[in-house]
Length: 405
Image (cartoon, rainbow, N blue to C red; front, side):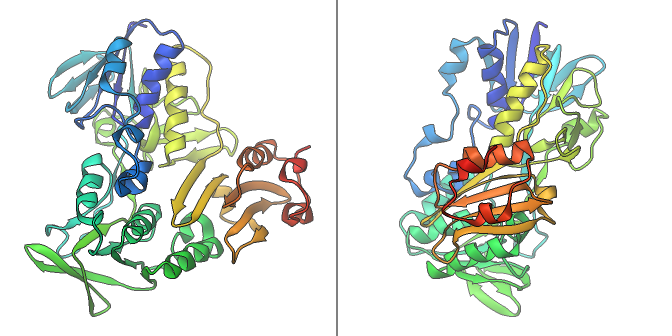
């Protein structure tokens, strides 16, 4: 194989390029990235980078010279416009590329709410480095009024960061509990109390009507009341960027459909990261994940498969967050966690505990909150699928490592 092209500028793209060279691929590698940066990761954008505690190096995977030193052609500020799987060509606004294999790692875009006033100045989403920079310019000095529409991970992390920086923060959510779709209502309540205790005005079961202002956002109308705002962040999820694949006739279903080795329906076309809905061989269903760890692992798997290796993307989904004084790690299979029994070890009120999602005695998810050194054992419990006694799972006197057989 002489030329591998990677489309995308996120973690999956960067990790794929890194793995190709690390594992000995000697052919040509080209990265086509629409943004004006080398591939970067997004978790810092709502936390450390936004707060000014971390620099650009915390987000960018490798500086541009790193790619040049490894003979990887990095085409930034370049948009892929057409993929032709039959001719094995990728057209861009900077020319045409012939490929032997191509990885589509085009990521996702923030979901846009059709609200009146969504196009006012001061209303934004958070996905790109520039988005975080714009937020930082408004929030780092404190004293601003931020209204966040939506209480998913992005919204809650930005709310925590903004509040820590000394801003007034209001979070508006239509559901009864924040993050319930991600971790269930019981664990969502933990985050609700955390934010309220830290001075966030968190309003659930509300209906956002419109954003108001003259030229620039000045408030958000919710259930007839206008909540004053200097800045409005819309954080209501993301949609996979599939236009390139769709136009190429590649099969889609909640993203770009792939097998366990990240092959799409088109020959020599692979997909990874937020845009891919990959078949997971362990749970035997397709699973699309928008988290950093998924993109990192998938990029490496895709690289190895494009090199001819027999690899599958079968890792356990993992996520982490830091909000105020709460540090959390979560591993598990969301489709299996949805109807699983929730067991708790430790002090929920004191926010120092482990939550287990258990299905027929088997751990299918585990979340450690302000408890370190246990995530490796949690993943191993999930991976083995062994039945574990519920009493032992909840007994703080039983070391987590000892639960492994």
